[in-house]
Image (tube, rainbow, N blue to C red; front, side, top):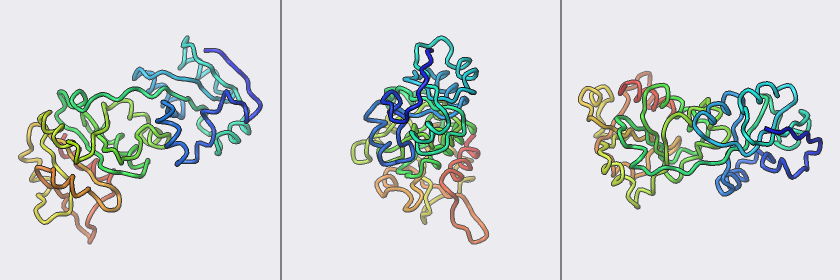
Length: 266
């Protein structure tokens, strides 16, 4: 690594880090620019362990020993800035010590991600980055072999998703599905997956009943935070499943529900 000290928030060398709190802007800039943000030493270490390559690192002086330990002899610029410069560039106080602009890896095919998978989690149209990150963390901790996300699902590599996942988005194999009308279910079925949709439906079976007779390979399908599953996703499901609830509560947060389902399927 090589150090470059910067004292001007307008310096173009740190343009990748500009306006990180502007979600709409970052949605446009990051995938199109082939990058994503890793925030904190732990997340950067997990990204590097997964084989991802850093484009640059932005850090305060006091974190340099940690950066040197993690980045090692990689040929990457490390931009050292004061706290006020970091805040002026990013739009928030960078408390976690460092940020890294990472090259976004090419996504694998659905068939490659599902090859050998016994349990997969499918996220359909989740719009909240925190829920996506929490779902990935649950997938990693509770034994999912793969995660699939639909085209309208929030970016798992968005900074907040990565942070909430504690870097486990780099641990679980994942990719994007095509639209339901373009063969999403066909691709899962071709890989031998039984599609189980979590839904409040009259014909849904209780989770414990489904688990007692679980198919060998299951893709567990979770819907968005508000409307739930897309009607095309429901139509593609082989089985509809519900978590039995009490206390007048009909459902759980999507990340919590996916964790319950994965724990039951473990």
